[in-house]
Amino acid sequence: MSLLAVENLQKSFGGLHALNGATFDIVPNKINLLIGANGSGKSTLVNTVSGLWAPDGGTVTLRGEDITGLQPDEIFHHGIMRTFQIPRHFANLSVMENMLMAHRGPGEIFRNALTPSRWRHFESEQTKKAITILESIELAHLKDKLSFEISGGQIKLLELGKTLMSKSDIIMLDEPIAGVNPTLALKIFDKIRTMTGSGITFLIIEHRLDIALRYADYVFVMHEGRIIARDKPDVILDNEDVRESYLGK
Image 1: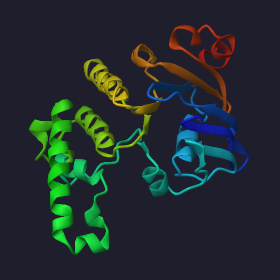
Image 2: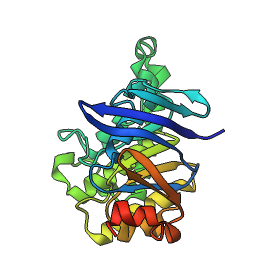
Image 3: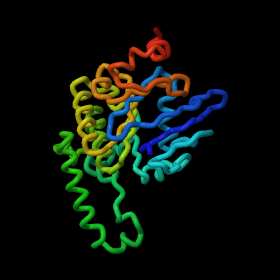
């Protein structure tokens, strides 16, 4: 049984077939890199799998369960989290508050909210967890800073920290190192590699192949709304279909 399997996924916008039979299954506990030329359907694929857009056809299954067309919050509670190329953080909340917002606690349930003893211990534990994660991504010293006060690269790290708070099994990242200097970009991918050792599976869209290919376990190539190749990084660029569709050779 596949962890996450997509079969014949279809999505159109007017006369544009953004997804045209996309089919693939990701490898668990690995970094799965999704590449392709602009307009090949990468973001549409992630948006559709994560519930942001409903597909026109095809299926998405998680551990054998059909999750096709579920709302984003339902997808999240099934164990899939995604980030966006432009980070969606709460600019007027602190770094710590952003971290805590990434985890749904029992205090959000009405009956638990009326009984503080049910959630105070949980909130305390989540705060400790957030501090530990912030230390691991070297943001602990900024925990009280409002998120609009930190740098763009630090916001990318904060997004990564929030994914750890979510306790998701599958994390989909849309260009996690876009606009980030090479030193920090390597640090971000180092953290992602460490997270796979904790049982987390990644599906990552990234254009900076000079860095991403160093870390990817498997590469999926999209062209005209379909997956046309899947292989390990050391052989994927030798694929003739990839050269013709992605590299233009």
